[in-house]
Length: 464
Ligand code: NAP
Image 1 (spheres, helix red, strand yellow):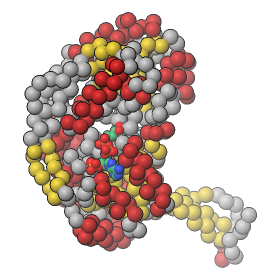
Image 2 (cartoon, rainbow, N blue to C red; image 1 turned 120 degrees about the vertical axis):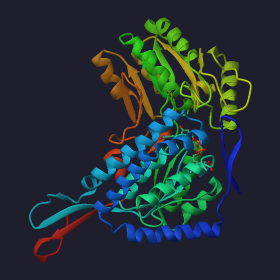
Image 3 (tube, helix red, strand yellow; image 1 turned 45 degrees about the horizontal axis):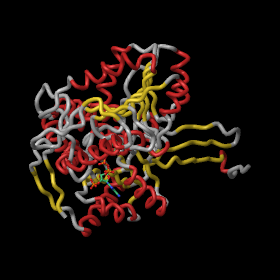
Image 4 (spheres, rainbow, N blue to C red; image 1 turned 180 degrees about the vertical axis):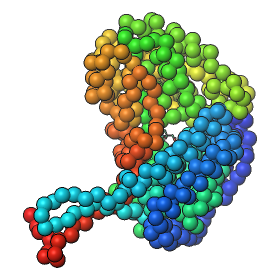
């Protein structure tokens, strides 16, 4: 099977790789397992030194990594540079904090006993990752997992094989031991074989619901721990007391970030009717002012979608929504010429039951709704199978608190846009998945939280 790297700006093939055969998959897993036996007994200081070197490589050669990302999946070069830098920040964060997060903890269980909690690595972790943040998604798994003493096997999305190999190179050059982080160039059809292998301890997936269902059910069958980071259809709520100018500027950024292909991009704009006639025209005008084009050009705001299949799916979603009664306010018409470009688009008057209401729109398409009050805003925001992020704009503290409590999401940003931060837990509820990445919670996902109780004086352990 061929794994092909394309340039989505032109459609041209950049490089073609041959997927590795089952024998080599087996060999790689065996090497990963041996690497775990060595890596688990290294000190935090040793691992931190390697991760700090990885951070230096990410920053020191940021131009190379950024160009690779832009070439393979089309994000604007400035965004790709920011991604490389963010990866370096996450490496430094876990290098400096892992020992504190995973140090032994004493628990007072009364006289005669001493109890402690230890955090020990699980083993070889399979990471199945998406193309949209080809460095960041993989790094936010790898930095904490490797610091915890686990080793990683990365099955990256098939359209970013060069990024996948670059990540392997970074960890190797940073000084992690042989095979501590390996890239497996395989298609998704081989994931089950790897996941069922008894030498694989656990798995993490960032991707679609369909992939989540598959990996979650296989891992369930094998009784293996998983973290699933799936899709989202984040609401962006605008209330009458909001700073409208800031809300419009942030709404545009939150929708088109990463060419509109971010799990935590704002996708549904829920606007109070008192400010709808002020907000919507400004928002639409700001979308129309964006520059779509070559992602290597500095003035470009939106590059191409990552593949023809994603573009076709977005067209289908808009067409079906329009047939159901939705109205296109701007965009929606594909440009002529090569590449998978898509114009910034806004739709409104969206009835329940159509794709713009029910599905994730993975591209620069905003779904706009009007509501009459806060209750309706919350109820519409929660009327989705997803629960990843949510943003709400209000200067009323009581309203803000209601949004913080009532929005069904893994993260709620008030007067801002949803973003990941190495220091803050990140993940979803409902069909956006389970488990958390980043922060202290992320590093504790793939560890054995072990209770150890010592009876003092060798007198036996109390029960009850
Ligand atoms: P995808 O098709 O699920 O692909 C993601 C990864 O899963 C790829 O490596 C893919 O391999 C693999 N895969 C696909 N189907 C699989 C299966 N049945 N079994 C095992 N592996 C499988 O996702 P996508 O459409 O490329 O990525 C976009 C999705 O990811 C969106 O829904 C987005 O919201 C979500 N996402 C979520 C987060 C988050 O943190 N929650 C972050 C980013 C993206 P192949 O490429 O070889 O098919």
